[in-house]
Image (cartoon, rainbow, N blue to C red; front, side, top):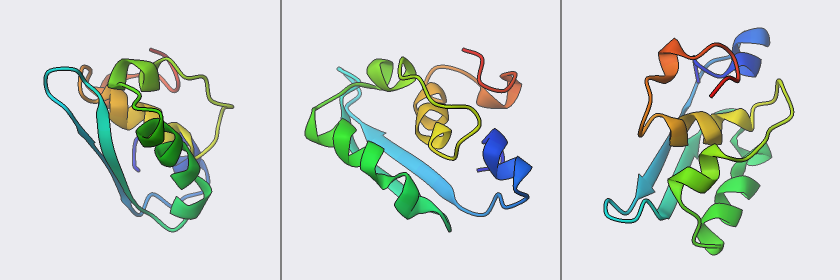
Length: 91
């Protein structure tokens, strides 16, 4: 959560998000969210898993900036990038 701009803005970076994905295809198998505002974001996780979406598709989604829902995209990006080096919402 410390990499999510909205979490930093509201000064509450408690929590974490974890994506479990199939190694060969990148298909998202599950998403765990443990954060005070997790209920506000879990709908995205349900959508990704239910529709058998991939990490690539998750990284291509567009979020309103700044929102806590960016945590899903940032987590998906962490499979291929060092998200600590990204500038706000930049790819």
